[in-house]
Image 1 (cartoon, rainbow over the protein chains, first blue to last red):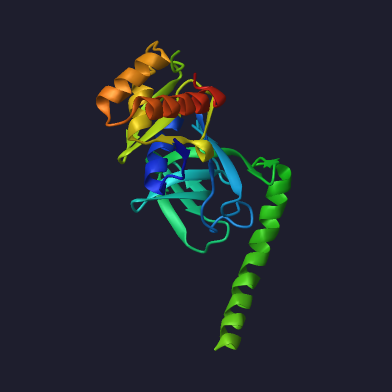
Image 2 (image 1 turned 45 degrees about the vertical axis):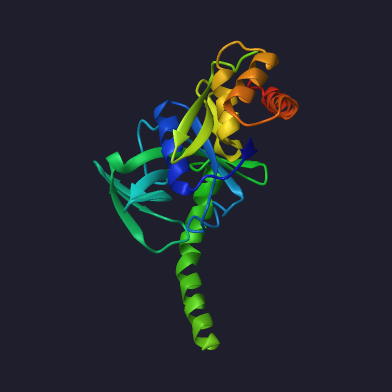
Length: 145
Length: 86
């Protein structure tokens, strides 16, 4: 018997079932698209079923045969636009593609709630800084050539 | 001894995984996967069974000496007990 990481698709099937079973699912974030808020291989997210979704919620959803954990930036009726905090690409999905919502996340033993006031302020600042970050990246690319 | 009712075995993509079904939250960072032999033992432990009975079943099923089987079973039960599954 051993503890072993399951590949994403296998783990996601179990996570989906757990959430449907009305249990919370805790797992470690893989990938950098939600940085600096969710950190790769460091942040643990707690997910549950949802009754109502709103802008700012971090959701787990199916997208082009993949699973993504991104933030809702726009929501209208059954249509949702999501995007990673550290990503520029938007995803247009249906409500039926959503598996669950992040209730809280924990990095280095610090528990954070995604809709808290502090997160809202940081998110606002991050959105302001993000275009400059993209510009700096382009400059860096030019100098490296 | 027997496995607590709140733990079930699920086969997902060829892997045998122990899933808690009654806990409020399932932590996927510490999920337990079982190999073939431990899956066999887990299935037998769903009902009340003794170590001697498990040893006998394992020796009949697998090509293994009784002494080695007993040691492996005791180790396996020890892990399950420590993790609170028994």
